[in-house]
Image (tube, rainbow, N blue to C red; front, top):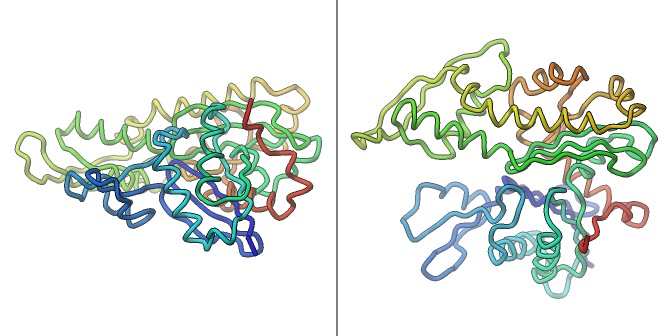
Length: 334
């Protein structure tokens, strides 16, 4: 019997929830291809470990960038492999709910639905990530009170104000965790003349990256290749340097939250002083981001209990209560 599935198709990670089982798969959204034959060599964690470590003809690609599909064929192949890994075959075609950024265009929506159906789904529906995150975080979205969710993913940052089962105000910017990593790479190249890879940049961000000054900060050693000599070299980075390197992207995220608050009806804006703002997504785990947002908005900010899983757990709630919650699906045509 086909199991209904929910997929959080993220720029950084893809998670799959099976009805009655919970989260059955959590892998990086990466595929390794042989560029000569277009053969898929690996997917997920195996492909992620190949980034920057392969011969020139083997490329590790992310089919989604900035929350948008950059390669339709590779996305379709990735969804097909995901469905195959969780036991979908031609005799067992499930209904699939896919979580996508609310910023995607109508063309991209149709592309995701088409890719999912071709990959083996009987039916495919789209759900906005901020709405799924609000459901997954356990917020009372069907009540006439304000619920604000800030979802910071790999490629996009979305702020949504939800009330009575719908989105009242929405702001989305195509800036996310990968942009922070890229800024760290650029800073180290410019200031120290050293080249580092995106995995090293991510490790630096996790270890000493922050959006505001916090207690217990420490410096970190960074190893890379010196551009002039081509030889390995080690430098020491301070938290202040990393904060400065990513400040422009963090400011863009903060401004989008402030803009969304400015669009809220007065009655709902008043609710937020009691309800607070809820942070979800991997990028929301950046140290000090809650303090930075709280200072900028004057509203309490908290990280939800399962920031990485909130979106797929919310979509899972939708497939488990399909008839009652299907009104939340996005229209693929508009």
